[in-house]
Image 1 (cartoon, rainbow, N blue to C red):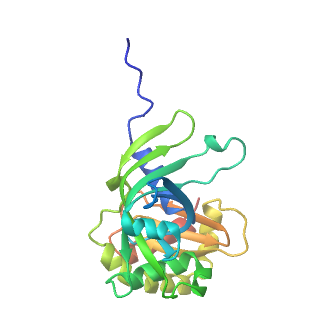
Image 2 (image 1 turned 60 degrees about the horizontal axis):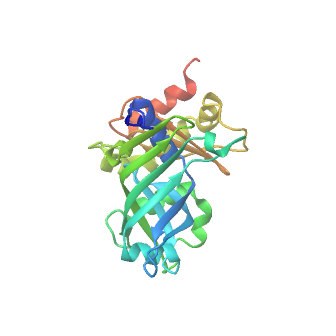
Length: 249
């Protein structure tokens, strides 16, 4: 009996980039955990942001079933990717198997995560500081990318993480760098939205930067842009952003 051909394609840089964009452009995702009482998978929906190294971050209530499950077993699966017109299975999606790490108040990078989360989810300001809410970083272990029919890939967790020694330095100067950029170029976000063919929306703003790229948000729309190469510091990131916004097409 002949061996069946593998449904997986060889993972290349295009697949890695698509996977990163799917994960980093997700405003929400489906999360699956293991119910500690029954052992059955339990799926729910969570808001998603990313830490400075691209690790997905969720904010959850300690009263929710998925939070109680993660407290007992940190293994989780996160499904990202929005269906569009036509067959939902024709659109890219990414399933990432993760290990959940709680980020309690007082943690060294709690404020950084809080700031980045609120920049993406401003309405979370209403409950983010409630005592029964906490963050989890979902450390990617491996991932399965389906880029559409006949485009399946297996990725390692490291393919989704920003491997840069400058991450902490960039995180410390990110907010100030973006403020300075916007003061010099008040229309920078709108120019970026135009250049990147973003959906028509009332007002765009830069809601996050890292050495691998930047995020634009307007209402329910979130746009992720990935640089060709890693930036070395926040000034380098803003210089890249300016070139994209104002270079002659």
